[in-house]
Image 1 (cartoon, rainbow, N blue to C red):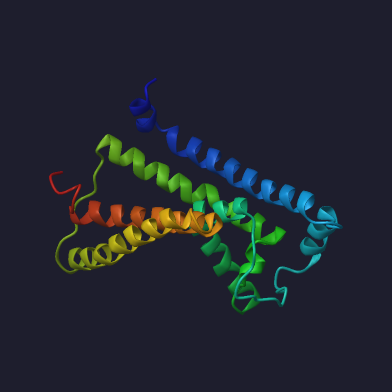
Image 2 (cartoon, rainbow, N blue to C red; image 1 turned 90 degrees about the vertical axis):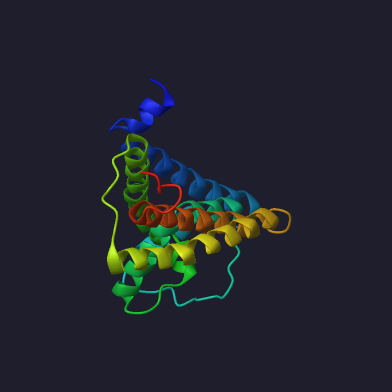
Length: 206
């Protein structure tokens, strides 16, 4: 089976979701491995048990403006940005307050995030499969079309600027560059969905 046939098959979305989920888990484990070997007196098992023992409605009470994370965790954040945003929303609703970044990179936050990952990447796989098979939806017209054009006009430049920042960031802060690259990817994905519905480039001739 060639690549094109694989992209058209119904197995592509679930396989993509599974592979990205395993990659996300591997990046998180890599981050913990780096912490264990890079910090003295860090008891990983105690840290995980202590965090999971707290009620879900309890915030850790620490909202720092900047938290140092490993490059692996930054890569996971960029790769699965929508999953982190969904987890942040869930924690905010449960705790009735704003979710801190430290909550997302703690064990229970990472577990909640990992649950979301397959759903978003299944959607990405389904979108790619639909594009490859040419199963286009009917174009939007009227006010909805103008709204989609406006959203696409905003998202596309933001994605390009963020991608350039991610490329230049490789020379200064690779950790931040991974997150910017992820933001650029998901913004481009949103733009592609808008472009398909409004028949903008590269979907104009379809």
